[in-house]
Amino acid sequence: MPFTTTLSESPRPEAERAAILSDPGFGRYFTDHMATAEWVPDGGWRDFRVRPLEPFSMHPGSGVLHYGQEVFEGLKAYRHADGSVNLFRPDRNAGRFARSARRLALPELPPELFLEAVAELVKADRVWVPPHGDEASLYLRPIQFASESFLGVRPSATSTFCVVASPAGAYFSGGVKGIKLWVTTRYTRAADGGTGDIKCGGNYAGSLLAQTEAQQQGCDQVMYTSGPADRRILEEAGTMNLMCITADGELWTPALGTILPGVTRESVMELASEHGLDVREREITVAEFLAGVESGAITEVFATGTAAVITPITALAGEGFDLVVGSGKPGTKSMALREHLLGIQQGDVADTRGWVRRVC
Ligand code: COI
Image (tube, rainbow, N blue to C red; front, side):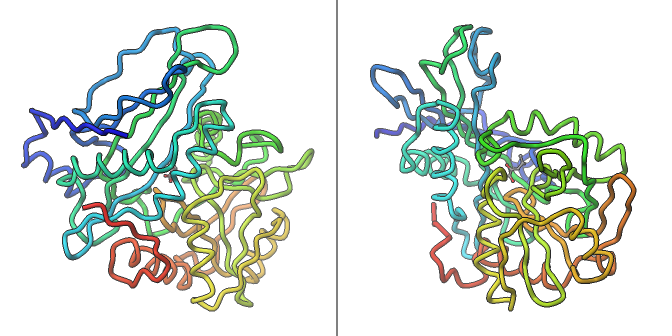
């Protein structure tokens, strides 16, 4: 597929870019370019371009604005000590993006085109990849949406693909100090047969009020529960998968089904055995979770996600409880897993599994 690159004639001045890279936060700034492509019924995918970042011009009747037919991904590029720029497991995101599109009746973008678009954008914006070290990276956000203007409820006949990039530091400003989750019994994230196992904007639109409730309760993020009537099973947090470590050396994480199959979740599960942990993907009830935290049978709790990496959960609250996990400090095993994972991502620890893909 021919891919054309047109570089911006007015990139952000170097001094401004350097100031941004010294304290990027998460999702606040965008780079100078974007990658785009279109899908049309008579030709399929076409017009793959990297071009200067600019607003979309969109018909108010576009399907995405009415029925939320949209999917997205999140992945990161890291600068290694040798100056090279490398993606972490981009093939996993490419595959999930296509699965998400299929579930929302959008045309699937072949994974090799997804990978090429991401790589070409990273090359054009290479100066935006933060320096080696810390956990700073260039966060890539591919999206795909319904672009046809039509008000009937049916899949859009046309679709737009786009990747934007944003330099990123820690997702939570408290970051590695640990965060507090609000276990909601009011809101459900997903149901069997729904869209909980894919990455679509609608899942997150529905989460915003639950997240607001969590913050009103003095917590950093919501923790969802499920179950037909009593919401007694743990699912995932607002933007992250959940994991706990037990005193007898097990790592528990909710089984797949209605939760997002996270790339960081999957990677941590693979690394766990090197940390002496036996992985158990299983149903975790709220009752056993709370009892385990209270008794000390669960010693550490953390959450995983591309944006959040590994974020320690040091406190939990919900209707009728307010608990500290372990000593109230990030757990040693979670932090060792975090260091291991970040080490691979940043090129400081040997990549024995072929997870790292060099771009430039
Ligand atoms: C990610 O971790 O990449 C996500 O997509 C979660 C969130 C920022 C929406």
